[in-house]
Length: 126
Image (cartoon, rainbow, N blue to C red; front, top):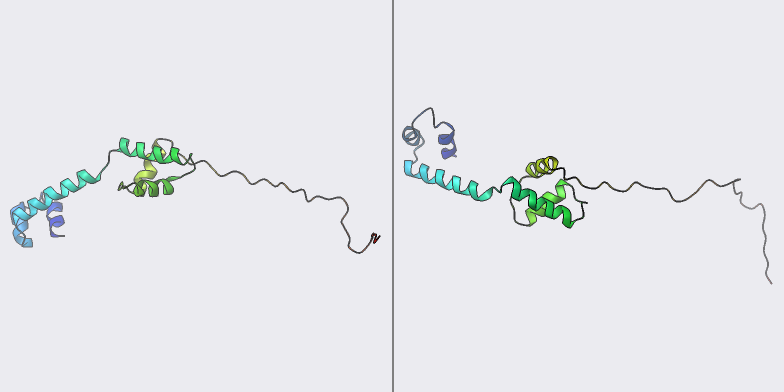
């Protein structure tokens, strides 16, 4: 937390003064800064590489998956990515889930005259 404060206010005060006020070493700050840069470089995947992964999941599921399912599938592949990033990339590249089929009524309930019970009985017991 202290290092984040230093990074935010770096331009106002020299780093040495900020480190002294927060009681952290300058070397510790620089190690933290370098480590933070390495982690962010490792974590981020380029947009083109991520679109390739999104298209692979989309094709594998025959276009039925929308962004929530695609995001879960990409995360299951071990790629750390945010929901909004997947949603935005899919929108930019025109990747959309197929809609569900429309419900069709197949039974015809429009009969002629209404059927009244106990009006006409027929039977044969031979």
